Length: 329
Image (cartoon, rainbow, N blue to C red; front, side):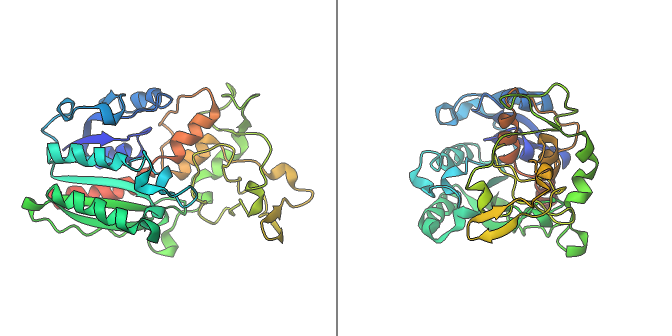
C-alpha cells in the first residue's frame, strides 16, 4: 500500500508505517536541517522540499491508499501561545485538507498535540473536523498516551483518522500493546546500556566526533524555568515528554530526583551535582522508538534534539498503522 507523507520531519511516523508494510513514494518536508536525515533513512521516498502551501496537488501521485502527517503543532501546544488556527502554522491544516480532497485516498491520519483539544480551541477543532467530513471521510478523533503503545515515555497526542465513506469502514482506535501497567516499558528497558558511552557535545554544542552513534548530550547552564520543577525520572519510570530542544532536554535517570525547595524552585541534590546531565541524542531517540540503525545527520546538536522531539514515536505509529492496514485488508 502506498502513502503520501506530509510534514514528514525526520520520518518517525513514516518509519512506523514502513514497519507495518506500507510504502511511501513521496514525502514533503520544508525544514532544510532535516533533509539529509530523512533521505538517508528513507531512500525509497522522493522528498519534496518546497513549502507545502506552494505545492500544486498535481505533483503528488493519484494512486495512493493514504495520506499521513502531523502539521506543525507549536500554535496548539499547551506550553505555547495556543493561538491555534489563527496562527499561520495552525492554518497548515488546510493544506493537508486541500491535498486530501484532491487525491481522495482510502484513509488519512493527522497527528497533533493534546493541547489542540483544550476548550479554547473547541470551535476550531469542530471546524476542522467538518472539513475532513466534507472531503468524504468518516472521522475519529482520539487522544492517546504513547506509554500505552510500546513507548517508554509519557506523551499525549491527538490522532485524526478518517476512512473514505464509500468504503463503509468503522474504525476503532487500537488498544496499545503496553496498556497494562505490567507491560509498560521503562527507561531501564530502553537506555540502560547507553549510560557509560555518553559524551558531551563539543564547544558551542557542536557534534562530537568521539560520540558513538550520536550518544552525545547538550551542555550548558539550566534556566530558571528549567529548574522550576523536577526534570528527572527514575530508571523504572517512563520518560517525560521528549522536547524538541537540547537546552530543555530532560535529565538522565542516573541522577536523584530534584529537591523541592518552594513553588517553582527545585534544586539538585548537594554533592550529586555531577550526575545531572541531559539525556543524549541517541537516548532520546531510543525513548522515541527509533532503532539504532536510524542515523541522524547534523552539525549543531540542537538540530538533532529538535527533529527527534518533533517526531511521532515510531512504535506508536507502527501499532496504529497495523490497525489501519488490518481494517483495509
